[in-house]
Image 1: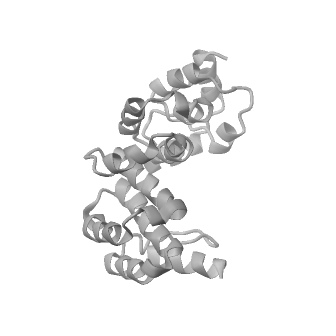
Image 2: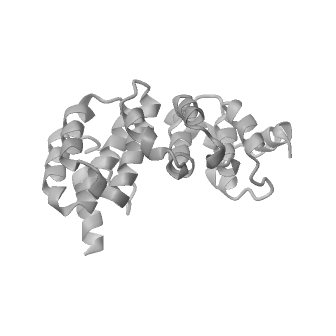
Length: 220
């Protein structure tokens, strides 16, 4: 399938209710309203890096989500990653990109701190996403006390897009690092970020103190 055939296919399976929900959650109008499940289960389109980049360059939400599934991270340079991260505008696309592309790239550790310090909110969001992942896998390589101090200072005034992954980092420290757990919980209680975030029944709250407590309880 070529670019136009894929775009026509995506448009054909769009749903008005999904479109409205996506728009409400930051997707804007550059989308078709395709269910995420339909993109996840797409089997006809195989890995094709060049096609993926064509899809990415349309800036259409679903085209970018599909691009993430069929591109090859190793073929992206650090410059490519930097430009792609800074072009993100939709949380769902950002989360998929961070999880399936950025996290899998060989230069992720070199990019992590640079992205965290970026004035571009989507780049900063990605940098903190990488940091949260590193805490869960390789916390010994990080200065967690310094990281907690930075979160305590910066998270209250950070843009919501950045707060989300910064808060994830705070929770991951509390979950995976027993020595720093008490301080992580205290910072969460002090800042109250996402304390009143609506959560469906049976789901874990993103409020760090509750998140930490619940995951630690499950692991005991």
